[in-house]
Length: 74
Image 1: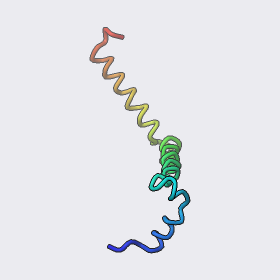
Image 2: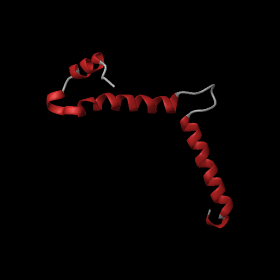
Image 3: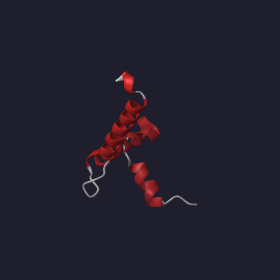
């Protein structure tokens, strides 16, 4: 499979190749990861589901199950 010449040219024009090598793309991926994390926390799907609410609900379920299993420790 031949590399796409447009993609190769675009990647070669990305700044920092001499000093940073392959790590010159790290800020781009850092920004993409931060954007993904932001959308997971703040984006609602029909107002009922997002990552943060799902995580909190699961933690509450785990705590309730643990309390039911061992009521004397609370």
